[in-house]
Length: 309
Image (cartoon, rainbow, N blue to C red; front, side):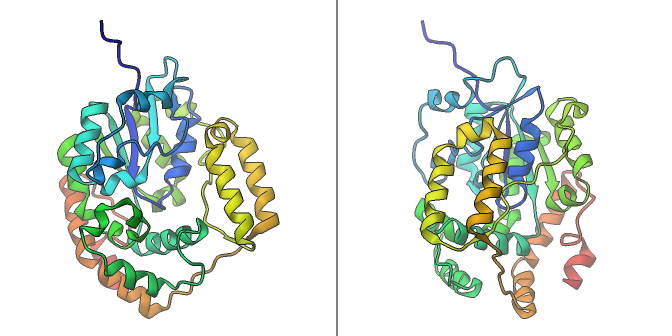
C-alpha cells in the first residue's frame, strides 16, 4: 500500500523580491494556526523555471515535519512570482487549492534594493554601479534567463510585474491576494490582518508586537567576514527561524561589528529613465489589478502617479 502523502504548503508568499516578504513571513509565522516552513525560501518549485524536474514530493514535505495540526502551512519564495506558467502549474499540481500572497513594490525602488542586496550577498562587485548592472542585465536574452546562474541579473526584468501576474490569477483566481509594500510600511497592522483573514486565520492572534522588520539590506566593512557571516546564516537558518529573538540579537551584534550604510547614488535622470522603463508595464499592471477587483492602487500605479513620475 502506498504511503499517505505528508503535508505540504497550502499557503505561499510567491512574490516579489525586496518587497517585505521576509517581514510578512516572519510575522504570519508567529500566528498559532500557521506552521511555517523550516526555512523561509524552500525554492522547491524553482527548477520548473529552469526547465528542470522537481525533487520528489517527499523532499518538500520535510519542511513541515513539525507542522502538527496547524491548518495553514506557509512558505515564502518570492522568486516564484516570475517563474512562468510551468512553475505556476507545478505549484497547482503539488499544493492544490493553495492560497497565494503577492506583495508588489514600486519597481524602481525595488530594483535599487535588489541591486544593493546582490552586492550585500557578494554576488556582484561592490564597486559596480547601477548603470553598469543594467547594461549587463539588458544584454542577456530570454534564453540566458532560463539558467539559474543569471538570476542575479533579473532585477530589472523582475519589475515588469504585468508580465507574470496573469499566470497566477488565471490559475488560482480568487486564491491570489495582492498586497502592496506601501501598505505594509504605512499601515502594517491593517495589512497583516488582511493577509491573515485571507489565509483563514484570526487576525487577533497575530503577534502583539506587529510587523517584524526583517532582511534589511546593509553594507559591510570586511568582505571576508561578510562571506563567513552569510555562510553561517545560510547553514543555520532552520535553527535561527525557530529562535527568532536570538537571530535578531546576533544580527544586531554583527552589524555593530561589520555593518555600514550602503548608499546607492541614483541621479534624478537615472530615476526618470527607470520610471520610463516601467511605464508600459505599470499601465498594464493597473489594468490587470482593476480587472480582478483591486481598485485601491498606490501612487506609482495610479494614473496621476504614473504621469507625474
